[in-house]
Length: 216
Image 1 (tube, rainbow, N blue to C red):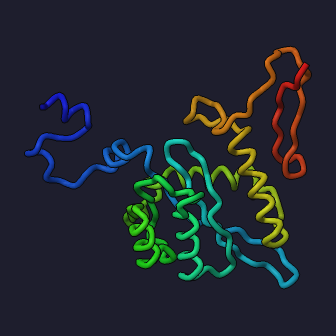
Image 2 (image 1 turned 90 degrees about the vertical axis):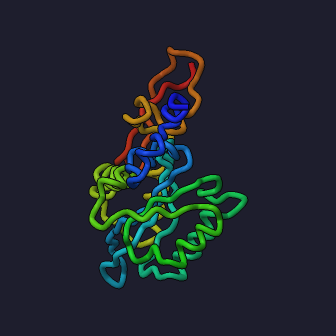
């Protein structure tokens, strides 16, 4: 029995009294965990500078990121609709997930958490001021800012959406990830040959570049 418990990373009964360590929780539920977070982007519009809130969800095991929504002034009705989209039985990003890690942002309301719970997704709220516990989401925010947004002047919501779509295409199919043995999340199939010409693919006006081998 001790060997069985150890293999499942479960402590013996006398040692289970304390709260579960965060690392243990992640290890036990790794494939079924996603994390959500917001980041802000300021855009120049005809009416002046507008600050947009961007909500994204990231799968911890695969690092795959879903752009859940962009809004200038999000409220509870908006977040509830996002939750419905995320748990849609056909193509919801959280379909099959068991837990969603979120911080204490007031937009993650009790109604938002109940809706997800009703769909079978447990919402795990982190302690206040603990970004290290949501490290994968924080790492993505740092990447999208450093590699993309910090180098651009965003001209309205439509421009922001296009930039983020292009960045996510690069992030998923072209960008190597250290946590995934330096391969892309969704690598494209390359040509069978190894002597084709090296070609360059530009995104976002050449801000992001990817070099690949063409067919011979």
